[in-house]
Length: 414
Image (cartoon, rainbow, N blue to C red; front, side, top):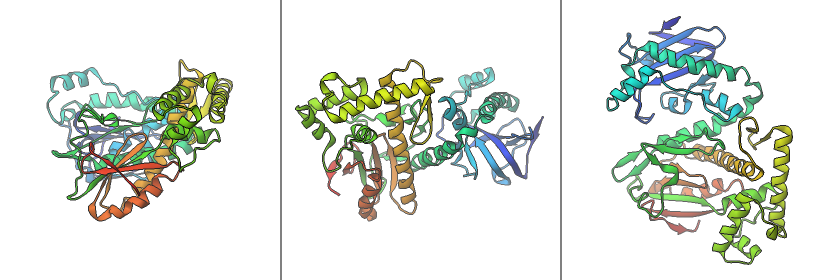
């Protein structure tokens, strides 16, 4: 039975929280809630706070307070735009950390009808009957509960994922990225096979803005006299791999230059060779190079462990499991682990960056795998040295570029 809440402090030890957003197209920062569903995991009680739906008496969300010892919010990263409820995690993480998949949200036929017929109408979810929203919510909730009851072995990594991924990526999204026409919002999606986030919103892939086709031209600093500053890791994947196998590349040399010397070829040729060795398996003619010989052994060792134990573990403790990674081979597994390792290293650095910038005017505006783009206030140019030290905290050197426009960055020495 559904209980509608109109004015109340809600305190439940363990709760599942499912927001229904009013608009299906707006970015979470610009959106508002249609209703909020709250489920008592131990007691089974269902509560609904109706905020904007036309189907029932509405209340102001500020009249409701929530408290829990342990809570799970579907889409917590978006919900953080409303409030940061302590002791909560993203409900999707509960399934993802066990089987590398998000919860299946889907839609009812009624949702399909309204979203198709009223595609251009704002706040369309406020028109859909609450009973249909509840039908959808219960389906997602029941799947969540299946994975919640087998969560015990994943609680430590759940906390890390919440801290390093959900909160950090939310803070980057909240900054937006400025253009000549105003601000644009990005949206990160961390629930990928490797946990490397995609980043797209409004049909724009912000994780893959082309350097040469004009896609970056419109991005400028939001500050009068400000600068866009990009920190870009040098030879990031080769350096990560070298560190993993115990043959770290010295920080005072360029990774691809060193590899070119090892191969006895030009830098451009060496990049193609390195790409083949790291992503297609080490070729016999390069096994005389100590680094690549160790990489070959490392790949073989991973594959043996994966098949013997049924899984391997990332540095953060997330499982890459045989039961949910299909059509695997040794090199593919190695690349999954490499991308996962890259992302986990980056998320820890990103978390530290966001904490460092908390009392600053400057903004972190775009994270793209091996680089960080910041919008630096003119009065804070002096923070670049501190940022460089922080970003290189894992032992990976960066090159730094800056400029007035994202498409026109030039190298600077820090």
